[in-house]
Image 1: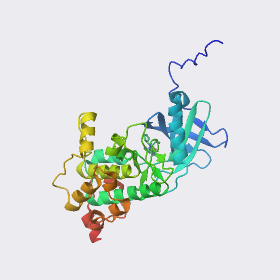
Image 2: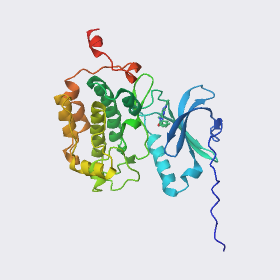
Image 3: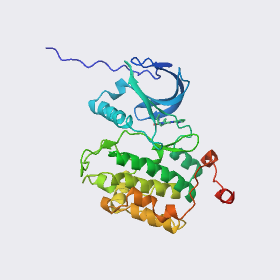
Image 4: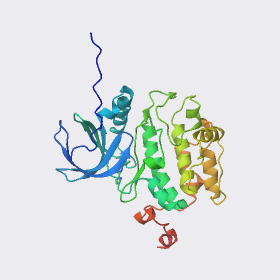
Amino acid sequence: KEKKIPPELPKKLPKECPALICDPVSGVKYRRGRLLGKGGFARCYEVIQTDTKRAYAGKVVNKLRISKPNQREKMQREIAVHCQLNHQNIVAFHHHFDDDENIYIILELCSQKSLAQILKLRRTFTEPEVRYFVLQIVDGLQYLHNNCIIHRDLKLGNMFLTDNMEVKIGDFGLATKVEFEGDRKKTMCGTPNYIAPEVLDKVGHSFEADVWAVGCILYTMLVGRPPFETESLKETYTRIKRTSYSLPSHLSQSAKELITEILTSKPEGRPSLEEITSHKFFTGGFVPDALSPSACYSTPEFGLMKVL
Ligand SMILES: CC[C@@H]1C(=O)N(C)c2cnc(-c3ccc[nH]3)nc2N1C1CCCC1
């Protein structure tokens, strides 16, 4: 029996998906708009549903790019987890389908992009803005944890912002479902940005790994850089295991306290999400109930709003 020769990978993968994307099953059509960027194996576009005229963010993955079984399983897991979610601080999952060439995931369009891009423009956020953003992130995360889902890759680049500055947690590529009480995950394929000590030590991790990431997000928003960033990944991992990071003196006392409580190496020593939102950092300071899109570019003057 002659050896099956794998199909020759075409020298060049077709760059673009069709200008008109059709779901062969439902018949729903989307017009491909501007390229939003690349995310993992996906090329992402703004897409317009032809019948409703509604705009979405479409992730298009060429099937030849995820030829290995574990890549395909990862994609399937991302879809399986994300498609069941429904919360105002979780990116809405609109539709998914595939044709001969591609897999298509149609998601909520977040036209202010992500908190990572905004922080780059702003360098740091004010404490009221951090309270405003982090309370929404914790709301969305509480929903995930209540549904036994660990996100495992919480970072500013996965915190998407709609045009009215609402935060939506996205990218469930590393997410996993906790199957039973005490289920501790031992492995993870992919390296999260804000990786917790217990994940590095492979001693089993669970929801507390997401809480660690919230602490890193809080620090990064206030300080303007991640707590354990160094020039080498190895050095960064050493610092994470030792929880060695600096707390700039300009931070408020309550901010320093909360960061210190969260960035503790023992998972069981970290506060719950409930304890985080009832910490003095949140209860003892002004929380705007809305934020102007101008905050994407310049520091807001809350003083006036408080008076108004
Ligand atoms: C579609 C992938 C990803 C994403 O998951 N969402 C929800 C998203 C929403 N709006 C946007 C968006 C609207 C306007 C600019 N970007 N982008 C999103 N992204 C970006 C695209 C490129 C890398 C990650």
